[in-house]
Length: 73
Image (cartoon, rainbow, N blue to C red; front, side, top):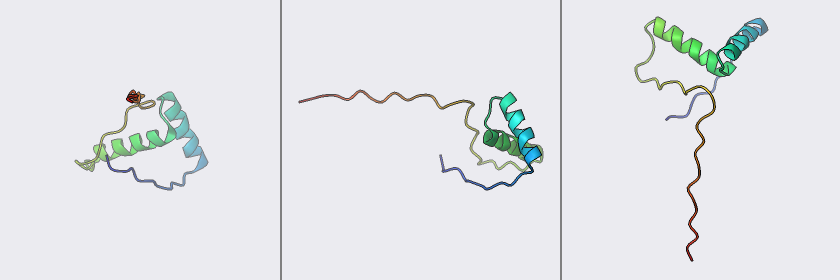
């Protein structure tokens, strides 16, 4: 997956608070909620790029157990 873009976004504090509350209710981070809202708006406007990667699932990524080290001597 290509590296994700970082964007500085300036928001009215009341708008940020409303998004943060909505995100908490949906069990998302504020950042994920903003991306969710932007993707939905793009889809509804028929402007979602066909090559856009899907959103990452909710919550922490699954834990990957390290492979057991073999101690061959």
